[in-house]
Image (cartoon, rainbow, N blue to C red):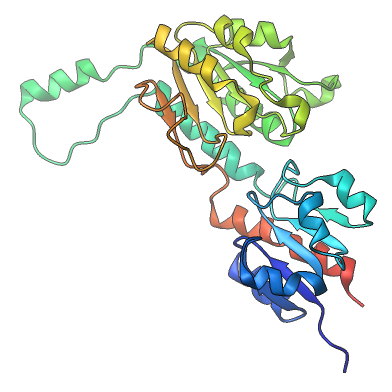
Length: 307
């Protein structure tokens, strides 16, 4: 009987996917700095990662037998595809696995920001009841507003569908020239026009190196003083220093950031302590369904290495 092939898993997978893979291979679990990784690296034929494992030349040099890398997620910005190609290592990901989860999350963020609400857990007087109803008022209705979507891929297009159903006027900017059939009733504009005219800006560009600080000071400073800015893409696509300055100068503006550079957030983050900056710990794709769907990249990995 031949020896089982070794696969290293550096980050969390759903139990079902991990069990499925462990039934077929010698599955070693440990991050790239662990003793388990070091011991298994010389014989590992596949590697399964999520967000925080950097698959670069240095890591690949530790994995001489590697044939496949699976990224349980959408983007490949933590994987040096060129380095993998030079070594004949195949790369897999799950491009549509978390689309629904991210669209739901962005929709909830927009509603949270634009429709304030308050819940009661005790009786109140009639006077206080009426005071609350006077205080908790949305000053803008969504069908009066424009949403600008930066990046019109799978998530961006689905966000457009929801936004238009609610009543937003929707514009988008993308590096690709989208055919009319894929525009979802939205209008293509320049990035400058999108930032200058939108009441809500939501970022969905990918993590390619060219997109580092794509959302620069010029775009940020062009935003309306009461605009809502949302980023669920990658932290490094935004100039956070410029965004912090904008939020301080425009107290009516809001920013909700689910992704950061670096993660976890450190003390140097310029947005900490700014009352109209809201920082979340990378939660957009955190549903059971999305996490499970992303984990099943193990099927593609196994198909690539199976005898």
